[in-house]
Length: 126
Image (tube, one colour):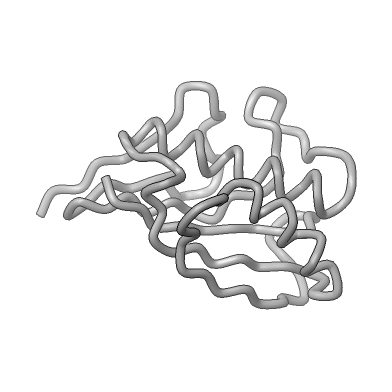
């Protein structure tokens, strides 16, 4: 099985040793995305709503660069540093999946790699 790295043109290349996405076997595996503006490299300002929106936009960019789309997502894993903000995150998340949302797990973590409230990884069909 061959694999192909997916790197959106508008997104800065990661400084850590990972790829934003990997296409293999008819699937696109999206690495954990965080609420960083892809053009500036800055964490978006605001609360969980703004951070969730930017994180999902980053996932969308990786999916589109890899020949997939949000409606082809089959699984997401959401990592949150404050599960008490779940309902606020869920409102924004729901707006990205008005019909047939992907399977999902949401877990609270004590800390993420950078100082953000949320990280989401995803798997989609290509």
